Length: 250
Image 1: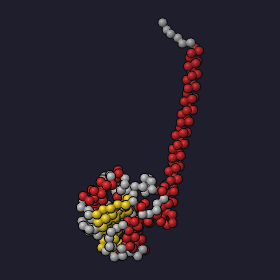
Image 2 (image 1 turned 180 degrees about the vertical axis):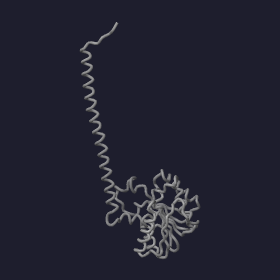
Image 3 (image 1 turned 90 degrees about the vertical axis):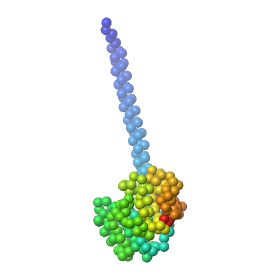
Image 4 (image 1 turned 60 degrees about the vertical axis):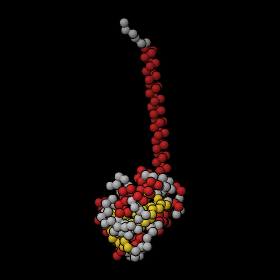
């Protein structure tokens, strides 16, 4: 025995399905617009934030950048006599600044520089000459994780926002240890980096204990915002809120 459905039921079902499909498409379109609007809004906020940050850092001839860089040298407990190593020199602003500040020092700047390292090295040398410190500066390609120098070869070591970018180091603390290796007992150091980011360095107090465990006599830390006026919006975790300077003597 076959069971049949009335034509009216079939028509009703088809109409219901059509209405449901239209409503679903409208709802889907509305949800899409809401999601798109939220993402667009977030993108606009991020764009505005990073544009603002760029303007802050580039204002007054990069005044804020220069102040943060100068902190590395101002906190370095060193008399300026001997040799200093700038790790991750980049386009050499810290190396040149150190050569100017410590007029009796010889400065070596190392960087990996990537594929254009030869050009970058020559530009560093050219800039150092133009700044009048070419005779006391030397630049070469090297990895911060494997410094091509003997233990205790330098009297001081400095770096500015480099350690966390060293790809060869799974544990960024290893980069700190390698930097400390090339200075002797009593040698000075000043390192600025994202030392408050736990995924890189773990807990800061534990990091300090680890460094002391390497035989370092004195290690201190300070947040740059305690010494330099930094606009509140760039002191967030996205920008300068996780920066600290480790300095002291081995």
